Length: 287
Image (tube, rainbow, N blue to C red; front, side):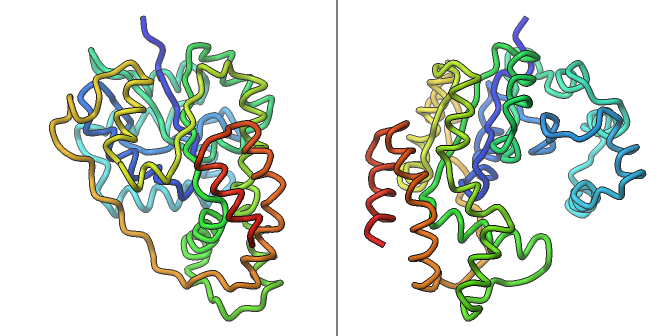
C-alpha cells in the first residue's frame, strides 16, 4: 500500500508555495488536503488541536480557523476531514489518515514551517514515513528576506513595511522575524542531507517557477513519477497570486543584508552548484 503522504513541500516561505498548492491541486494524480499546511511535524503537543487552542489560546491556529470560516473553505464535502483535523489526538496514524487520498492518486502536503525543523524532528519524520519524498523551493536570498519581512509585518501586526525606517531598525526586524534565517538555505540543506538520502530531495528554484512555470511543474511531476503537467492537466497552471505591494529595499539595508547572507549563500553554491545559486552569490558579493 502506498505511504500517505508520498511527498512534502517544506518551503521555503515566499517562494511560490501557495501557487504550487493551487497548481498541484489541478493534477488528477495528486491529492492535497483542503488545508494547505497541517504543521504536524512541528507540533508542540500530541493533544487535539481544539484542546491545544482552548488551553493555550494559540493565535496562529485561531487566525487559521478565522480564515477558513471567512473564506468558506469548510464545506459539507470536507467537514469530516476538518473534524478529524481539529478534534482527534495527533500521532502518525492520525496524520496518515488525514493524508489518505482517493484511489489512483498520491497525496502530499505543502508547509514551509517544515524547513526549520530540528534534527530530531527530521529523524522523527523519516522514521515514521520512511518512503517520504521532500520538495524544497528556494528564491534569491535578498528578495526572499525582504518579501518575508513585509509579509510577516502585514500578517502578524497589520503593519506595512516602511523604507524610511532607519537601517538598524530594519535589520533588527529582519533578524527578529526570522527573515534572514529562512534565507540562509545552506543550514537547512545540510540538515536535510544528514537525515534523508539525496535522491529523496527535490530542490526547485523560484527563478524557474517565474520564467517557465509549466516547465517547473513538469520537472517536479517527472520526479514524482507522474504524468507531466502539460500532458495530464490539459491547461496552464494558475496565474501567479498577487502579493502585497511593498517598497524597494533601501541601499544601506541591502548592503548590510548581503554581507550577512554571503557566507551561507557561498556554502549553498558548494552544496548545490548551478546557475541560480551562482547568480545569487555573485549578486550578493557585488553588493
